Length: 246
Image (cartoon, rainbow, N blue to C red; front, side):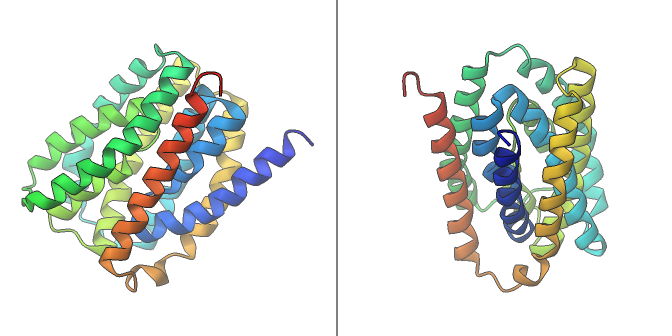
């Protein structure tokens, strides 16, 4: 019973997170981080998140298959995959509290970073996506989710709505597959983490399938408000859990 109730709560969050992630292109793992860190600790949460992210991105790829820009996916993944392996090897050297501080701070810093990038209104070329993949791939190896910081780059390339969601999901899928394989090789992912990731992933997948109808009807300003609210609440929640003597 003690194990069942936390998992039930996390799965319920996963269902809602799947809907949210399917609408705005990210947010699934951001919403799941606080309850996972709270119930299972950061070192268990990060590999579970990687497995959930694989399922979530598979669902988005399936929903938007015909809209995916495979050239962008290939260029991005070519540098992101080796970078995420390097980042994952960096992660296992950290202590749990430091991981919590990194996760929470990173989410909060993404809010002004996204606004700044949006104000620049720059247009990315295809080769720029290789640089983006290298940087974000490394960060993804260290923190649980970088979907939010991916957003302005994929939008700046000219991808919109379904094309953005599908291409970003396909690109992230290769990264999280590499991350999961690296965690397995390092002994971080055990049978329990795999079971938790798959169970939560089923609920995330179900939520993702409900999202497609909402995408085309979501105004841009609501999209941005929702995105920042998710990042802010989750970042503050994780920092609170990392605060000493709370």
